[in-house]
Length: 189
Image 1 (cartoon, one colour):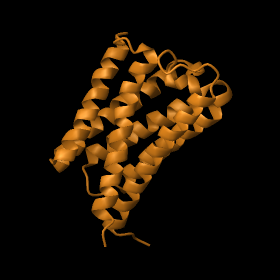
Image 2 (image 1 turned 135 degrees about the vertical axis):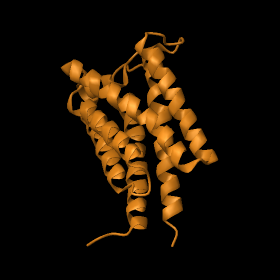
Image 3 (image 1 turned 180 degrees about the vertical axis):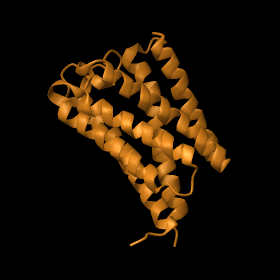
């Protein structure tokens, strides 16, 4: 059975929104449960080892799957955006499948999801050219700047964990917003 483009877009938005929302909420839960966790001084991926590993790793793998599914159903947007989202999803899955204790593959997976999720906003801006897409591109830019600062060891007094959150949270915010926008635009009957 072939589904309509409108239904495909609705699925894309719902899955992206749900994936981003569950990840954000489960990271908060894992932070609360992780013994002596510091948002400033611990990496987000520290949640992927120890007592909270099952929460974090499952959640980020689900996020990656959601991003890939969303890209597959995102029929009304450019192929480059879909490719960038698929790569971001692969990176997210890699972070959960290969926790930080695995070394280089975890690092490369993190960089892949950080970079691809951030630049995806420019492809959205290029396609939509509306005020909300400008806001999403600003969020992507904040994440890219934070990624460069993070990679060079400049944490602006926020600690390694705080700077890492300036990469991740803007990307989660635009994903929530974009997913919701898709549902609102294509969910109308």
